[in-house]
Length: 196
Image (cartoon, rainbow, N blue to C red; front, side, top):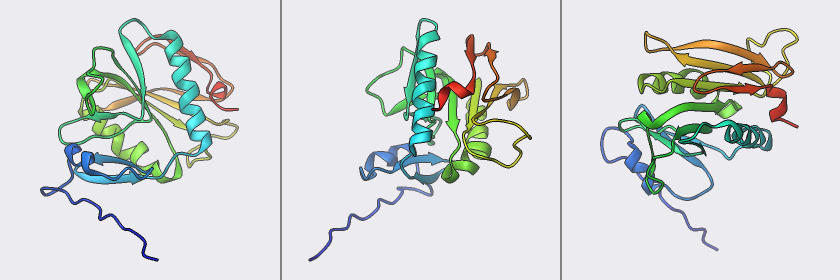
C-alpha cells in the first residue's frame, strides 16, 4: 500500500514571508515566520491551552470598549508573521484578513513551552518591540531556569515598551500573588487562577 506524501512548499525568495503561509498544509501544526525563517510548532498541551483560554476569558471581562482578545492569530510585521498565543487589538480590524497589523496590537501574550522557549523569551520580544507593540506578557507554566525559591507556577512577566524601544519588566508575579496591571488597561490577576 502506497502512502501519499505532500511536498513542503519552498519560499519564493531568499527567505520566508507571511504570504508563504497561505501555501502551508493544514496538518495540525502551527506555522509562523520570524525574521524570514519558517517556525513550526507542535500542537499545544492541555496546560498551555487552559492557561490561554482562562486568561482570554479574564481579559474579556475587563476590556475597555473598542478592544478584542484574539487567540492564535498572526501579527503582520513587514514580511514576518509571528503568532502570539493571545493578543489584545483594536476592534476595527479586518476580520477576514490573514493577520492583524502590528499598529493595531496593544498587547501580545506568550505562554512558554519546551518547544518555544527560545522564541518566546528571546526572539519574539525583540520582534514585537521593534514593531512598537506596547505590552508584552510572558507566562512560565513549567519549572524554568531563573525561577526564584518558593516561586509558584505559573509566573507572569509583564513588560512595557520603554523609551529606548525595548521592553522593560514592570511586574514579576508568581501564582498566589495578586497584582493590578495598568497597561494597556487596568487588569487584576493572580496567575494561580489560570490553571486547575
